[in-house]
Image (cartoon, rainbow, N blue to C red):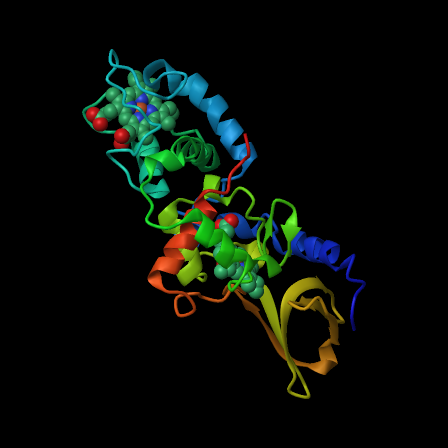
Length: 271
Ligand code: HEC
Ligand code: HEC
């Protein structure tokens, strides 16, 4: 059954919200250890506010460090951590034998992650990175051969079967972007998990869960078709935590991946 194309994505959003239940998130964070799930613009702002109160007296209001306190500049590549997880540990545990003390134990993890996100947002100035790829060539691959816009929105244009990438350069660094392209299954937020249903006649349908009740399940597939199965019509169904995005490791050469990374990393809020 097809859905009015103008409205199907709204259903997708409803389905997505449904899957993205709050109980899933802490469970995922626990299972996978150190993944920063607090990386939106709101998190950056909350992190900045907390930084101002707790950290700026040593690191400076602009986070550029302070010679008197010996607190380093946090807007450049950090010397003691190369990942979000590393920065999390520094804030949580402090740096032994220095003025960099751990945050108070009753500061909850999400708040620490917001600090991490804020700090990461300071160091996404492309000028700090020497990327081998070409932004223009990457943009051409994105809209051309890669057909990435069929799933991703950039600047209000594109599909909704994947996250909006308009500002992806602010939340993913070049290494992470490369991983996104060659190993999309590495981290998939619950928002993008799907359900695979096998009907009694052997038909297999995979899509986002739209609804589920005692009688059956409704799915929307990647082509925006809505499927509805009653319990009797189904052999089985399972949750798929893999990404619906294909890996591009074979599709693109090493240098084309570099071009795409350069392009993606250039996507940020327009000033
Ligand atoms: C009392 C002063 C002081 C306060 C307050 C403070 N820091 Fe620090 N911080 C330091 C010093 C000094 C270092 C350098 C320690 C070293 O490496 O010798 C440091 C190092 C760091 C580093 C590692 C930098 C690198 O280049 O690897 C991070 C990240 C950091 N601080 C974040 C924070 C955050 C976030 C807060 C607020 C929750 C905070 N700091 C509060 C003094 C402080
Ligand atoms: C069939 C749909 C589909 C296509 C085609 C697709 N993607 Fe994706 N993409 C997704 C989905 C779904 C996710 C979220 C799940 C995940 O993390 O893999 C995603 C995630 C991403 C992310 C991580 C975004 C974030 O916020 O963390 C990047 C970057 C990305 N895609 C870039 C691309 C590029 C570049 C192309 C084209 C070469 C592409 N995608 C093609 C569906 C797609």
